Length: 160
Image (cartoon, rainbow, N blue to C red):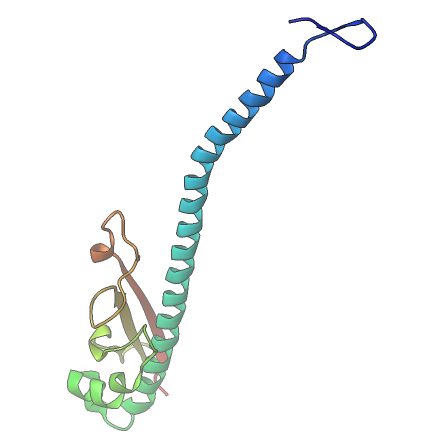
């Protein structure tokens, strides 16, 4: 298409330039349609990894508190090394971290190694989403991995 300006001069058509602008908008729309879901998945993964890190840090703090109390209470009652009900009463029932450690069953039996020098005790605590009234993890769980996903922390401490 040829255009003529007010003075009678022939002006080149801008039709090709206009078509390129329309293509750019369409290409940007397609790129956004592909990138936005990818960006949202990356945000979701970042949030879930951060939650896992916070859970692990809370479990480590709880296990540290429990193993320290276990090492102190060993000298008050040596039966604590072999009796789970004494472990629960003297230590595990007192260690709670809101929404992370809510039940004594999250702790495994304390492991005492009296033959090492110095003698040590180890405590393990686990977070299994959906158990003991804990929130499911990951949440939401589009791949149904939560039932198999367990976060745990083990701490070893010398008997005091």
